[in-house]
Length: 145
View (cartoon, rainbow, N blue to C red):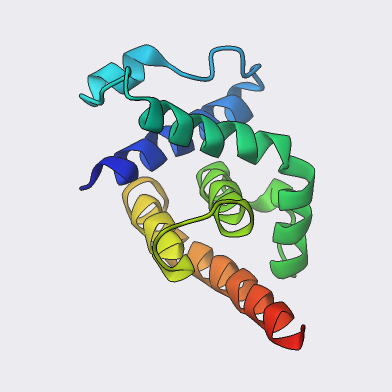
């Protein structure tokens, strides 16, 4: 796996942990976790990318959750698996707010990979469906302009 994928996994784990434990984001950059993965904690681009994913997700949480609600018609956020919700939140943040060198589809593929590893049996399909619907919605809005 490439470096940015590993950073995304760590960011997902932090987002999930903060949500589950209802904890503050004071220790947003968990040095021990980063070191365990063998990532260079002195690398500013790694720190910046990780912090952007976690901080950006929580700074825009209300907006992100509203988008997820709008797209996932029959699902309330309370009914969603917490792992799936953390992956979705980070995925929505990435699609809506990050400038990504690769395609937006690559962002969805990243979320699917994380879901396959950490989610339940059908998490990858669920996450793909919601993020794909969001991407199509975004593309339709651009085309209408």
